Image (cartoon, rainbow, N blue to C red; front, side, top):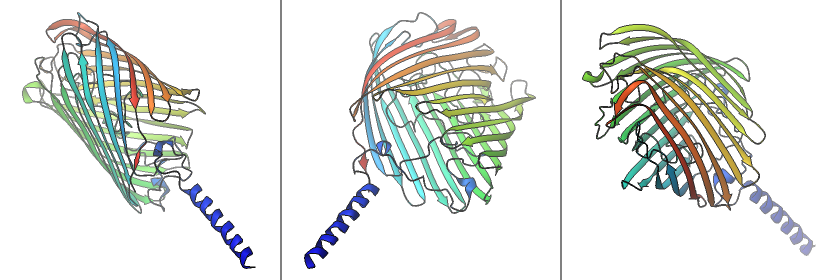
Length: 466
C-alpha cells in the first residue's frame, strides 16, 4: 500500500509540474515571440469604456487590432549595419550626386510592468558615413510612454525627442529600423496633426525636434468618459544658413466619449492651439478646433476612425487676419489572415516644416505589411502631402506659397534564425515648391531622392526582468 501511495503522489506532482510549465513560457524568450493567451490588463475593471482594445475616442490611444499582448518586463537590444546608395546624399534642390552611405544604428528598448503602471522606453541612435565629400552625421532619437491606472481612469505620458541631420533617418521606411518604434512612432490620435512635427527638408541642416503629450482619462459611467490632453511640439534648426523657421506648438484639448454599442463609439472634442515663431519670422497663430468623431471597431479584425469639424484661425502678425476652415481625419485599419493594411487622411494646421511660419496641411498615407512564407516579410508604405502657407511671404524661409511632398518605400526582411535579419529597402521621395526657391545655396523647385539599402540586423534574446 505504501508503495502504491508514493506512485500516486509522484504522478500527481508530475501533473502539477506539467501544468505549471504550461502556464509559464520558457524564460529568456522575447515577449514578442511568446504566444500569450491572456488578454491585456483591463484599464478599470468596472468601466468597459476603458477597454484598451477600444479606448475612449476623444483621447490619444488608438484602437488595437491585436487581441493578445506581451505582459512581461524585459530589456531588448538591437544593432543594425547597412550600406545605401543615395541618389542625392546632400539632399539638394539640383546638382544631385549619387554616392554610397554606410550606417550603424543601435536600439535599446525597456518594457516594464507593475500592477497598475506600465513603462516603455526606447533609445535609437547611431551615425551615417558618406563617401565624398567625406562626412559623418549622427542620428539620435529617444521615446517614452508611461501609464498609470486607477479603477475608473488612467494617466498617460508620451514623449519623443530626435536629432537628425536632414529631418529623417537614413534607412527610413516601414520596418527598416531597429527597435520597437517608440522613439520614431507617432503619438496617436487626438487632434488631427497634433503628433506630426517633422516634415520635409532640403539640405543637411540638423534639426532637434520634440513632441510630448500628457492625457488624463476618467470614466463617468461604464459607457462614457472624459479626456483632457496637453501636447507640446518644438523644432529647432542648427547652423541655419537657410533661415529655416524655428517654431513651437502648444495644444490643449478636452473631449467626451460615449460607447454606443460594443463596436461603435462617438466623441466630441474641443481644442485650442498656439503656434509660436520668432517675432521677426511670424509671431503667433491661434487656432480653435471642434471635432465630432466616430469609430467602428471589430477587435482583432478592423477599425475605422473618422472625425470632422470647423476650425477658427487667428493670425496675429504680418497683416493679421482670421478665417474659418474645415479640419478632419479618417483612419482605416484592416487585418487579414496573413497581412495588415492601414490607410489615413488628415487635414490640419501645422508649424510649416521650417519653410513657412504656419501651414495648412493635408496628408494621405497608406501602408501594407505581409509575411512571405515562414522567414520573409514585406512592408510597403506611401504618402502624399500638400501644404500652403498661412502668413504672407514676408514670414518664412522660402517665397513659395505652397509645396507638395510624396514618397513610396518598401522593405523586405529575411529572418535568419532567431537573432539575425537581413534587410533590403528602397525609398523614393520628391518635394516640389510651386515657385523657385533658394535653399542650400541653390535655386530650384524640386528636391528628389532615391535610396536603396541592404542591411544586417542582430537582435539577441530579450533580457527578462523579474
